[in-house]
Amino acid sequence: MTNATTSPNRKFKDAVYDQFARIGKAVAAPKRLELLDLLCQGPRTVEALAEQASLSVANTSQHLQILRAARLVDTEKRGLYVEYRLADDQVCQFFHALRSLAEDRLAEVDRVTRAYLNERGAMDAVEGDELLRRVRGGEVTVLDVRPAEEYRAGHIPGALSVPLSELKKRIAELPKRREIVAYCRGPYCVMAIEAVEVLRKKGFRAHRMEQGVVDWRARGWRVEEGEEAAS
Amino acid sequence: MTNATTSPNRKFKDAVYDQFARIGKAVAAPKRLELLDLLCQGPRTVEALAEQASLSVANTSQHLQILRAARLVDTEKRGLYVEYRLADDQVCQFFHALRSLAEDRLAEVDRVTRAYLNERGAMDAVEGDELLRRVRGGEVTVLDVRPAEEYRAGHIPGALSVPLSELKKRIAELPKRREIVAYCRGPYCVMAIEAVEVLRKKGFRAHRMEQGVVDWRARGWRVEEGEEAAS
DNA sequence: GCACTATTCAAGTACTCGGTTGACTGAATG
DNA sequence: CATTCAGTCAACCGAGTACTTGAATAGTGC
Image 1 (cartoon, rainbow over the protein chains, first blue to last red):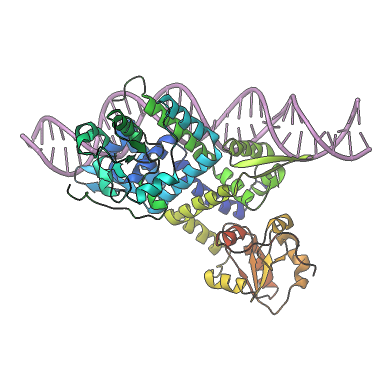
Image 2 (cartoon, rainbow over the protein chains, first blue to last red; image 1 turned 180 degrees about the vertical axis):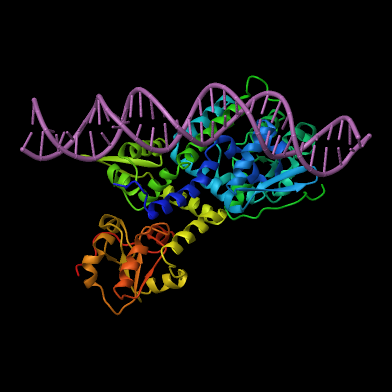
């Protein structure tokens, strides 16, 4: 079949697919996918990434260097810190293509999330597009419960920034009568779930929106940057 | 930081990213990417895949089972053979997203292909969109040099099926005056390159089109199926 | 039944990968 | 100038992976 000395065609193909596999290998580890997901929300330091992905700093650094070797992320030295960011918007899109491929093809993804939501006490069914419509129409108070930096890097127009960690302190600021919709990083981020739990306990009418800023942007809708208007 | 007993949030996230990584792991091996690429052209038996990817049958079977476990491919028993096919069109799209990410981000891909083309004797620069326009306009004779089954599974409208293996025999069928454009599986498939070499040696005006059927379809253009009209 | 074929399974080996630990670099800060 | 802090590097271990070889499991045709 293939003779002992591999043909130049074969060599070429092997070389090309080896290159493609560099991308594949980079996204073959769950923790690297988690890091990519976080970086889709905006740039971050190694330490921040390590904490948010529950990794040691050394380990995080190594994963990031693998991602950098695959040219998926870039670094920038900012004073004492090293800031990691996605190398290109295409990377974020690719991550989301991978994610939705997994959602569509692997029934386990759905199973796992359902199990988790059940365990947390039967979250109501997400209302999907109807909820999005009301958010867009400004019919509800929209809460961005992510850390303030991520809000600054981009948020849904009109959303208030109330990081989950500050929610209890600042709960008095929120309008009691109006319906509240909380969102965070996306469908697999649990901050909005917790926020809704807190809000409901205090008597608010609160819902969780699965979509994050990235999904919002993917639909071609406008994303606002910077601080919110002074209240 | 994270206490000994991992929080349920962490467990959930780990479980979710583990699932995503199943897709990642599936595309982490160059040979599996090559198999996926081949399957993008149409269904095939294990043996055919093994031969075209220069793998042993047993090894091919194992790779295919990994792809199947990730739900990227499906099997169908056809008499004595097992036919493997992509589980969904989304898989093909995902493969192409990965490929173009690699092309855009990894300079090595370009370097490797240039080196190969040079070695083969300075292929002329591909003319890209201008060539595509002429192909669409029917201004040239279009040659599909892939094996006949692949032609049948889908080809560029109006293209003639002349598998590379039969080209020398059937070269008399081709119109001598008209310009010929040959295509095969895509930019990293070498059959069209070889076809053009043969044609030029025989005095034809021949060019290679980088794009394959998949790229054609990705642009939203019509793809024809089945045999060519009797000549 | 029998031989034949396409594919899969099982076991073994060399290699790679993820993660830990601890030392190291290089830029502020006292 | 020593200290502190963010991040990286190096060495190591256990688990996993790609590929080979040889046996086992279907279907087909006689």
